[in-house]
Length: 282
Ligand code: PDD
Image (cartoon, rainbow, N blue to C red; front, side):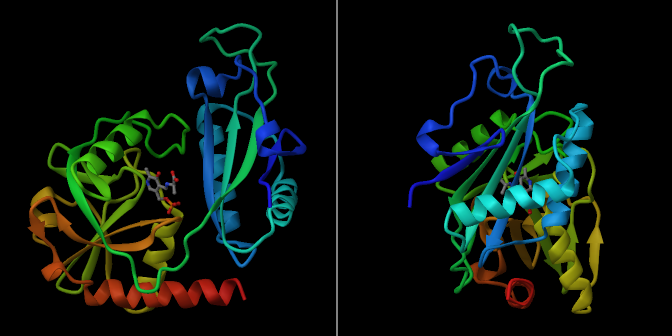
């Protein structure tokens, strides 16, 4: 089936979805995005994704072009028109098209809205492990905004790939922030640690689900600073995101974590996560 893209109210074949060269998203990365996992045609944690979208838009001073009900209808239509099933739904909202290229914001411009679908690999059975490399967090000071300005993230991710790793785990000075497109967790003595939510990390929707499931299972979760030293000496480490779910990190650079195996806490939470998904998307 050919891909159908939503562009400013129209549903068009992907090859016909075109934007202006004066779009501020194209010129300045002046926009925000969301990636929503869709399981069995049901968007996962949709309200939470829409809330985070609202927060990102507000921080950039962009008026939300749609109400929640409108978004939900648009999303349902895009999923249906793309054949449903398991999808990674991409939403992209920019400040729109200016009359000339100018750093100054033209309040008159209407947002550009794009929604499109990517395949979602949900065969997380068996659980998919990762290796990671530590890299200095070279990004800006507003990583809590899900901005389309991802140059830092993509340079870090690609450098990690060149070093032979699946993800870059980032740090500012000695403190871990997050991955280039994931959040980071570690376990010590069966207690879970993850960096607290501030402007240096994106508040991941998967991160929140994992914290909820862990606490529900009776596991203690600490949201606090993690030093590089503590991360490297952890019993378990994993990364999380909408597309990777929970991925145990078995090696960070030369340091083997959890004997290179999937740790027991990651195993439990992965199982809980799979049944939580099934319940919601039945
Ligand atoms: N990335 N941190 C960063 C920098 C991210 O880009 C992401 C997600 C996360 C995890 O957030 P969530 O659990 O809501 O997916 C954390 C998406 C998947 C992406 O850019 O494709």
